[in-house]
Image 1 (tube, rainbow, N blue to C red):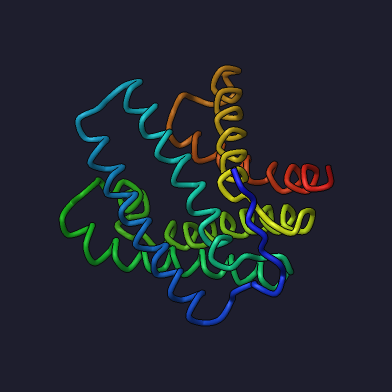
Image 2: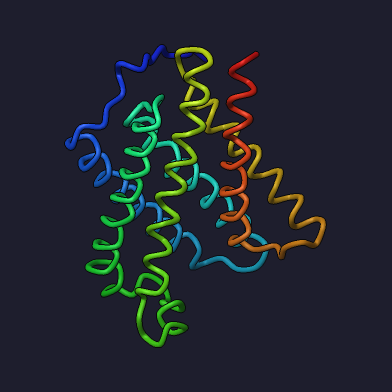
Length: 205
């Protein structure tokens, strides 16, 4: 697989890129949520957990690395702008989710019930989490780019997915966490944390 050269001078964090690509990321998230909800309806048990976990790991990789692909970060400022792109994606998703997905009752709003009918207690956490995912993905991208002047993005994302699957298996098989798709989300987050030093280490080779 070819490695594309992407020097620092090609960092892109103009308003059009950050806002436009952020909106696209929000739309991608909507599509992912719709697919997740529809695919899950006829399933239950182990099959449901496996399918949901696969979708979550894939979706997490997309959300983490799409901002990096758009911004091509190498400097600290560009990493921060990529995180902003992720935040905008979460904001756009929230608007579309509230305006379109809620009225059609695509899925149950359990978190609203926990919060006494309000979703603001967890929506803000989602915004922060989205920014962190984009920040970690872009940080890993930047570490890889500094070592070789270019990034093989599919390979970088594939490494993260591989680490996430390994961590998911460890958490479940050791009994530290239940066999649940939510643990797949945790595994993706932990995998991104691991990916930052891993990318730096591999870039120095």
